[in-house]
Image 1 (tube, rainbow, N blue to C red):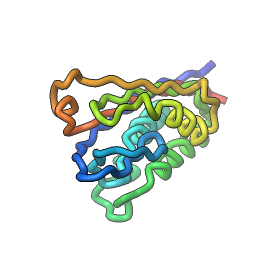
Image 2 (tube, rainbow, N blue to C red; image 1 turned 30 degrees about the horizontal axis):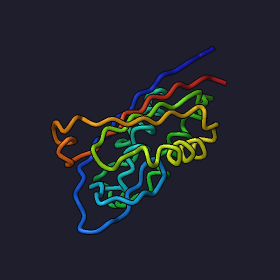
Image 3 (cartoon, rainbow, N blue to C red; image 1 turned 45 degrees about the horizontal axis):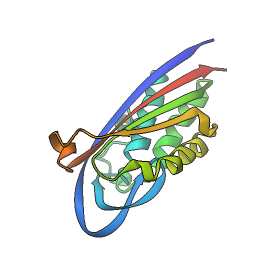
Image 4 (spheres, one colour; image 1 turned 90 degrees about the horizontal axis):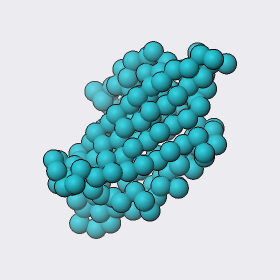
Length: 162
């Protein structure tokens, strides 16, 4: 069997809101007193996953396909980015065997949304929920993430060849 592993990572600044707003993680809209600062919708889970898929396919990163210098990508729905990565993956006759996501954040608390994010990723990638892992950790209040100034996501994907 021809297997390919890809890794992706994404970091973004966050800022505190005066009142509760919305944040998108893994295609799931959640309520939060923090918002992600980004050129697109800031879905770091889909960004990291898309880079992992592209990497496993031997392609460039999402910035190559969706540069933040291009105004047409302003406020872009990150599902468009993921769909492009999935399209490239399929064109090379690969399919997803599993996805492993690790969010690094003090806020929001991911446990409340873990199952929703898993379900969303499974639906978006057209795989079963048991092929998706979503985990979270903090930085124990260290660094910019620990000071609630940022959020990060690491993604790994294992692809098989048709």
